[in-house]
Length: 187
Image 1 (cartoon, rainbow, N blue to C red):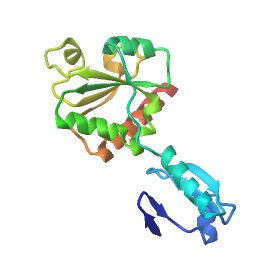
Image 2: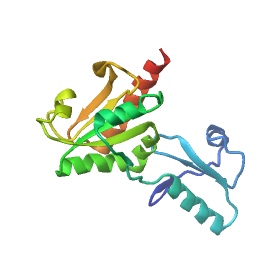
Image 3: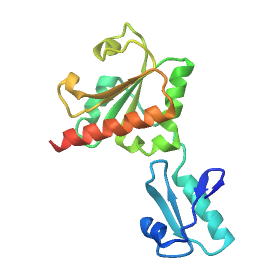
Image 4: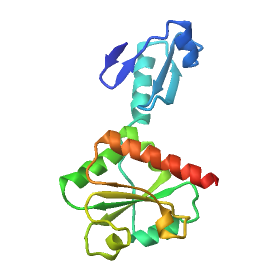
């Protein structure tokens, strides 16, 4: 195994590895994300095609800024109500470093692939606000994932993460929440 700044490279010289990654060509480059899921595959034959493959892989697996929905949290939840595949991510944030760290984790390339399943809304943290009271938020940062198609607010909360968390914790939180949401949607 070789390491090249953003990638680990494994040579598929044996039959078992080639079969595992479904490589049918000697000159195939296959890229996997941090979860081991393939996100790009291409044949290469020249140095330029290898460089192009790396560039394309970097573009596909990149940090993404969050597209924040505008409006009050209740309005955003109402607007998304008809979409049975998305959750509303209520991010209760303040101006402190912990809030910045949570947003940075949500924008990381390992987590950014989940952004298409979320509608993000930023809520200014104020312990005395009606929104904080409604969702029982007592500190920032807090990220609450809400199923907008659920009428009952308490049942609509899929999961909550409180305080600054490391990237791995945010990633695991989202994976667990989507799994829970997907299972409840099938019922």
